[in-house]
Image (cartoon, rainbow, N blue to C red; front, side, top):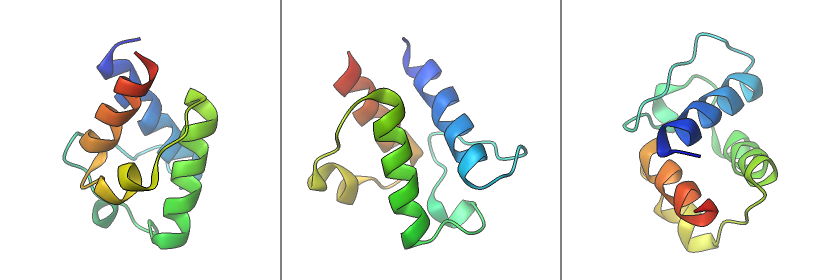
Length: 80
């Protein structure tokens, strides 16, 4: 799986969680860019990504995410 594949899958997960097929994510996308992405939904995002990729984020991973690109990098490193 390539890093771009991971980004595409994260986009699919976000579209599903927020029930919006028009969401387009880039490496620079943040929670502020997606309506309804609040702290509670952030937990759903993290949990859904962990389940899909069969990984577990450490707390310092999650608190270090500044944007989707940081998240994708962490996912890619964990599955590689």
